[in-house]
Image (cartoon, rainbow, N blue to C red):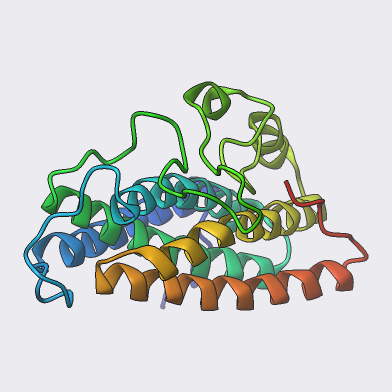
Length: 232
């Protein structure tokens, strides 16, 4: 007599472990793509971008920006109640982790630090209004003020981790929508001013993808009767 079938439901600890393994795998692939591709394969020459170049600054700062999105996506993937929100979080987690791997691979290839030492966005000379876009290290370290546009505060991240049920869905969509909107200026600047063709293409791809995701998140919030957060 055959044994009755057993439940194959995966518990939260197992799910978290699977997510962690998947993130490591995606990061490894992305890093390999960035590190082993030679500069001329990327469409440029063999010169190494200067430490204060747009190319290096964007790769460093966008890695930081992406890493927060990855953290928020991991939370939503395990805690969100809406399957559509979990699907979106999974797509964001895997795509942005891959992009971080590529950017960190290029930085390693160029022998540049993985993260800038002098605050954020100093590589952006000015915004459309002529104002400096650089931020000090003190600003980057403050808990209540976003280190870069769109970044969630320590308190907001803690609230997302503690939220349950539909509150997770709404809070994740709100924070991630603002996060996408805040990072757009860096992507656009890199797409216009970076010198490494592959990095320019990556920035352009980010713009297209995140604008599409922002439109989707705005729609999803409206369907849940929620409003987007003010942009920071």
